[in-house]
Length: 221
Image (cartoon, rainbow, N blue to C red; front, side, top):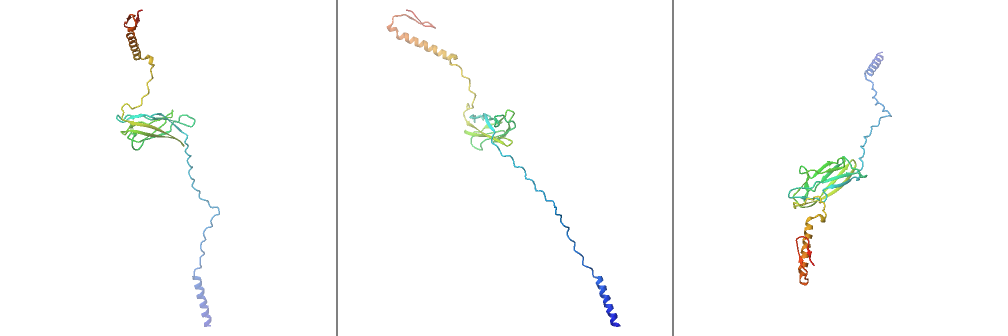
């Protein structure tokens, strides 16, 4: 009888211990990924700039071959005209004038070696404030015109000189030589001298009386 009670008691303790032990909990499963995930958008690359086309024409209107006065620092302003491939003036083109860094040359407004301007309705642009330096010799002014993706270039050659009369002036119209009163005076004097010599040299062989009066020469036979 005692053994039976002891067995029941042990079985009861085992049952109580089993109920007191917590059951293992199931591990949470990660949510299933949707098969239709959104693909991140790729950043769009900027559009490539249009290639530069060299089809602008830069015509030199003033300044080519000019001679600048280095003594008085007087120079000839450079003026250009920008045209397109159809020879039409280009308005609003950016025109850059560049002077040499050293040697014979000049400067623009503010003692700058560059000047930038915009072409007007006639396609023309000039470099303001041009002053030659004190060094003599030839130099080039490089001109670059740009408009949108088009470009054109030109070179203006000038010379610095000490000669105070060196600045190029427009030529004066030539007068007809027959309108020059001094030429007529010279012709008249030469005619009188020639006739007088002829009369004097021929006097020894001629018995003709010769009378010379002011103005026309009269020979009495």
